[in-house]
Image 1 (cartoon, rainbow, N blue to C red):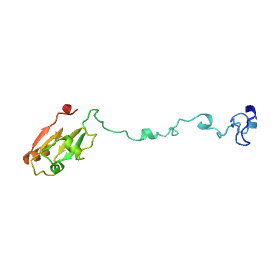
Image 2: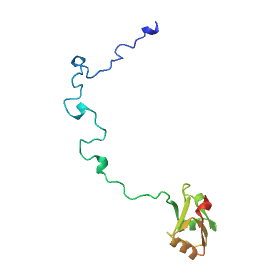
Image 3: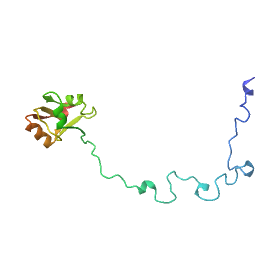
Image 4: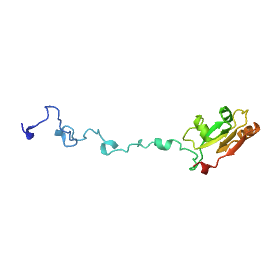
Length: 150
């Protein structure tokens, strides 16, 4: 057997159907496109809806805007801070306890709950109620400069 004698098995290879090449070809005249109308004459854009107002234009647009340099804080409540061991609590201790995710670069202490012991808390921001509760329990609050932590 020689390379020029190799043929595919019988029936495995069909010839391409050449549409629009005359009636005798089997798919002549309208070539399977029906009679008249847009699709018979040309292609239609994917999202064209026949002249009806397209879905993309019917749906309302998103309102408002997101500031490009907004600060995202990981929130920790005063109650959670009070449950931690140690007298000085900073970002490293909060991350080690699993109260703040790793991706949260900035930490804010919020005033939900109560604290009963004196603790020195270091964070990037404090709510007014959290500050008053910590200081009311005899503790102190230290705001960490954002640039110093980077």
